[in-house]
Amino acid sequence: MTINSFKLLSIFLAPAIAAMSLSACSDEPPKASTNVIPTIEVKVEETEPYIPNLAAGEKLVQNLCSQCHGDKIIPFVQSYPNIKGQKASYILKQLRDFKSDGRQDLYMQSVVKSLSDKDLQDAAEFYSTLKPLDLYNRSKEYSQQ
Image (cartoon, rainbow, N blue to C red; front, side, top):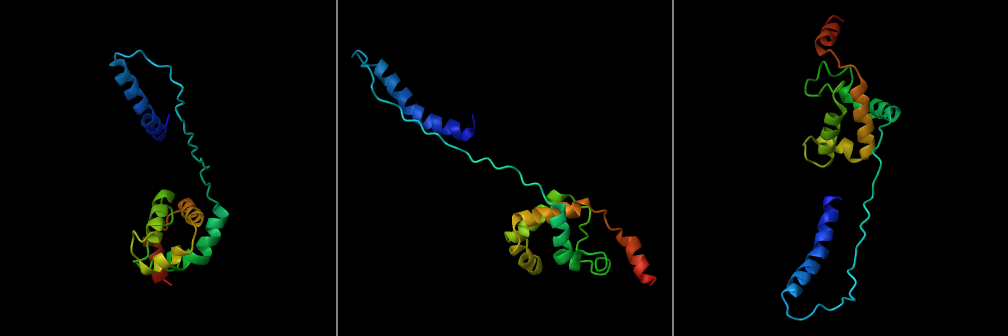
């Protein structure tokens, strides 16, 4: 029994229990009750959890995210986070925060506003499958070129 079901049940049963308790204090013999106690059936919609699509996540990352979070720019622009290999749940939370304006960055907020939650999950899951970028060695490679 869920908490909501318990609350609904207690709302309807409490008056009936109170009436029975008060009728026990009376000198009158109990009357046969013809009242029907109404019941409410509450259906809770159960949805299956979304399984992120890695191919869709990869396409989204290549077309939208890699311009700022890609291998070629991250070693030089330190304000762009290196998100390769981060946990999907962490990336997803950050993306949802940008979308809900819970986290402030005008560019990121404008990028994620048009994306669905499934898009955010796909991109987060894809990034979590990647090997983290070794920024130290990567920047040394670029400086030697």
